[in-house]
Length: 69
View 1 (tube, rainbow, N blue to C red):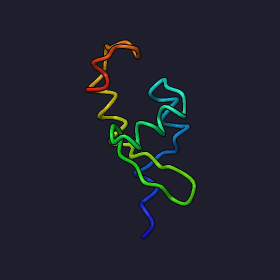
View 2: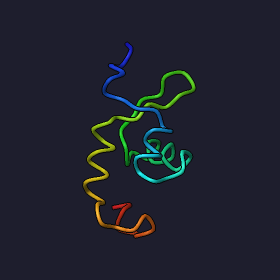
View 3: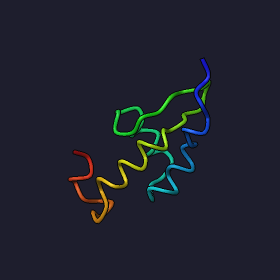
């Protein structure tokens, strides 16, 4: 079953939007901090989960330990 691509973005797009390195975004998806699906060798990240994470961490430094909660 193929996911609706309009609901997903690449890890590169998510990294740019969140201000993280693409490797960190992939790690976040694997750890369940962001929702995503793996299609072949490529991770696709849910646009909704990126927006929710961005809203939840708004105003926090990217090094703030509360971001991981």
